[in-house]
Length: 130
Image (cartoon, rainbow, N blue to C red; front, side):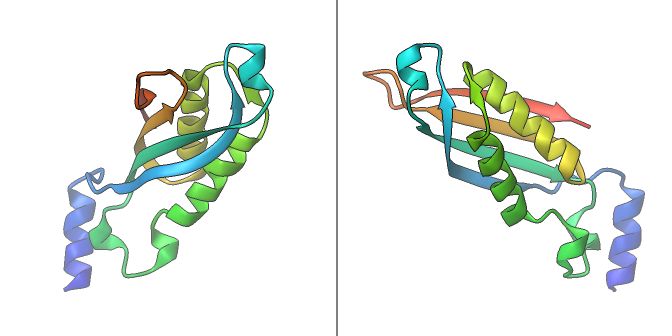
């Protein structure tokens, strides 16, 4: 039965299956003012990864899918490295990292910054494909 499901999935082309990471807390130096750049800020990032392989073909084996724990750690490490002025730049960096390091068809990234008074957050959203 699994072999048949894998065969059918391979005939259907790229997967529409998704792995969702919601509101991962990251720490980074970011901002357009010197004051913002003085200390790391806590941001939250959510990302939706569309793997190259559909879930029906995974055979219950982590080696056949995207290790979302490793992806989260990679995003945290990336965010902590260096300084950026714009959250747009960090969102692009995260998308590029995930597409480069993991077998993905596409990724969507939402990055939230908690900086403006009278707002819950400011966010950017992007979608990038391989």
